[in-house]
Image (cartoon, rainbow, N blue to C red; front, side):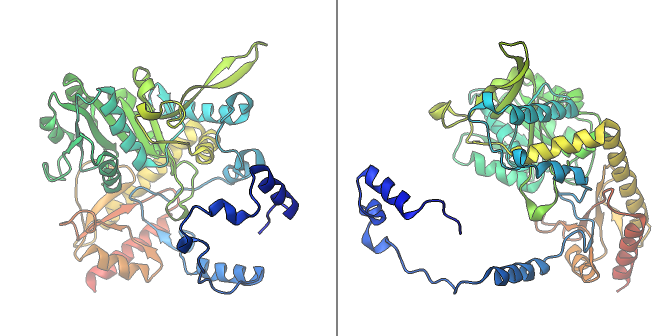
Length: 449
């Protein structure tokens, strides 16, 4: 380990603060907790460490070694080489967050470009930069709606079609608060569409949260739901798969007030579950209730283009006890990855990728449902993900096909009791026709076993 301070440096610092030894800094702590003997293994050389890390890495399988149809919130999309090449430039890779924004023009411009792209993609007025992942973005939408109405509309209607991890995160955020969560606790059948949420809306409802597409891959037009919640004086939050917006109508066009999402499909690798990127966009009228930071474009005193933090809701040093959120930073590097990806593929490229996902998924669904014993759970239109009822427990099918280097999807029994025989299958542009045909052959083989 490299430590830049010499013994002389340390002695000078100790003398400056008036102590003789480093241990004196901890004299007020109970002695039984000071400098305990750590039972650590013997040290290793660099070569030995590298060998051990390689052994650990080789025990893991990735989407490069396996054919993957796993989705459920994280998707195996192609990341152009240029994304990583740009991210690894020192000025980006080491940049954290602009505490002195006026001298961080490059960082601020990257944030501004990201915000502009996401606002355009979602059809919203403003976007922040940014949240930790799709789950925390949904939870922050719930926080924002609660504080927008100053606690006078504490009820939140959560669609059961919202990702189960997102809903768990919302409950973690709101535990101990006056927020009332309804809708995803069996009040309506899973098969129901958004119209089933409307009877749950009343004058106490501040927010309705839905997904687009939903966790089961289904696509709905939420215009009628938006009208219903707006008539009640509340807001509509839509959690999106941003890749789908290359093909589908943006939520801003059917009345969404808040749009959140998981930015992982936009040039961010799977990476064993993170770090990811939380998208968050809203309408101009709610911008001052939005957590996080907002970069803006202006002109300096020389008439040159400049970037500034127009709103910096840095909770600890700005709002303190009046803070509406505990969000304290942004996923700057991941936001840059999404910016580079969207800039590289462009509007038409994003549409092409979305169309590939859509058509390949529908080909897969058509082939799978031609096998005796397999059928679609819903006849609702879907994007790149669909739910299949299997002739055997889905976990059993998953385990069998995994032995043949095939990740067949996501068994739903753990998250949705009663759906143990259902498999959520995701198809992206990375899945070839041969991959899909091999999945079909594997599912047919299991059904006859």
